[in-house]
Picture 1 (cartoon, one colour):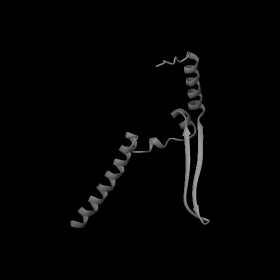
Picture 2 (tube, rainbow, N blue to C red):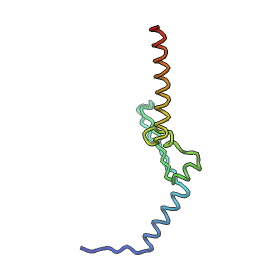
Picture 3 (tube, helix red, strand yellow):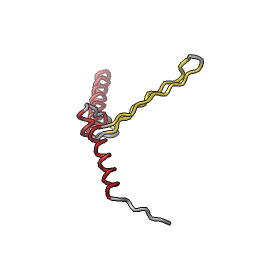
Picture 4 (tube, rainbow, N blue to C red):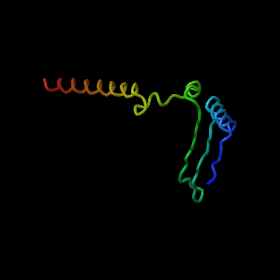
Amino acid sequence: MTNQMTHPNQATGLADILERVLDKGIVIAGDIKIQLADVELLNIKIRLLIASVDKAMEMGINWWQQDAYLSSEAKDRELEIENKALRQRLERLEAQIK
């Protein structure tokens, strides 16, 4: 069994490349279409962005902040809206009973 040694320049080179990609961002895009006799059966558009969080926010991409599964603040906002709707419904029902 041979042990392959990693040269320090290789590790540094990979770290530099990763840092540049995250700093600048990279977009990979592709489309998949399935057609049968000129009838489109399926169309899938794939877009992949690889960037740091700071770079993504600089570009105006911040969907994770509104996703209740990823953000506790978004979850709290969602719960507040649901709570308000339930209170209003309860008030309407109590008014009907009186």
